[in-house]
Image (cartoon, one colour):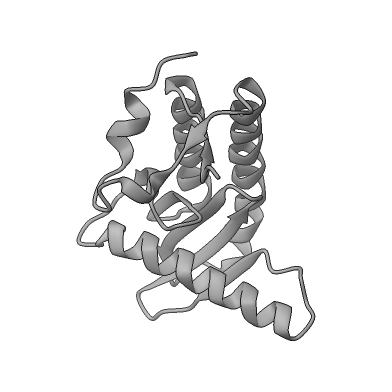
Length: 161
């Protein structure tokens, strides 16, 4: 089974544009689109000293654990996870079955504001990924064999089928 649909340059460009718009509108520091296994597909914003590979893996696993807990308590509607910090906070938003949007933002910005702007970016990214799946429904990417530190080059080499 594929972890993501087959992505081409125009898919990544559209996802990057959505993330850039989101970072600009929300005041977020960094936005990462990661697949369900925690592999970074693309990112926008200022990384600074953030270890994005580790953040992606931990965010995906944290969300998976939260979903498992929700199933145990018979709640199947987990769509976000919030980690409040003193300097920076983290919001993880589900992007349908495709993966997650992990957002690092200054703690001074309210999570409600980030969630508000997050609705649009999740819809835009989900729509682009849905289009990619529809374009090549029997093809996809298995990121389990990639370099955890930087999966982005794989997506930039793709051409339209």
